[in-house]
Image (cartoon, rainbow, N blue to C red):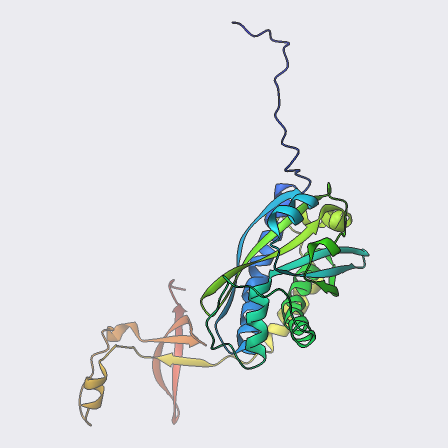
Length: 302
């Protein structure tokens, strides 16, 4: 059967997965949250005194109602976040067993086995207070990430253990879910940042510029940076050569022993700025002091 040239092709659209966030925006959000995972991991590991790691697992777009009904477990710790100055809201969700484990660690425990098969139905008032403090340690670097990304400040508003009491946007609202794997004591549990489209729509245009386009240099800033750099002290040293020796050989060295440096004498010495080789030079003496004469830049003759 021959298709008429004017026949329209049918385009399938899955309305269950709305795509309000374009790929460039999602790519920049993912890149920023990889950096967040590194900084937050170091901070929480120090506070909990145990291995703690966050890893970006991916992103997906779904209606808010689908996220809350199909993705958030019954035993969850939900934190409502205020996005300022936009005046909107988002959610940070952790599984309740993971929050319980973090609380135990912050209270000095954590040696008991991690049991996800028997989750507790709730938290005591003390545990909720400690849990909010732990979330503050997760939230502070997250807020810094969004300030750098879109000039948004994230603030903790309220916490809940029931999805029924958290309704920040209509169920049909397109929502970006940022999945982050949270690992503590060898157990991994998901953490989700639920970001409705209307919560960040006013600032999304800041995420659409390309990172690879030409940029105009600010002449005044360039001069200021150069002046600041020229005042920095850098250690300058001259190295005749280097060789790797086993510790046993080093301990057996005696006065008068000869160590071959595997570098021809005519190549002179290498001048290092810090740990970076920058020049080749000839060794000598200036009056009664040792000195070197610069012969060429490292890697290319003058």
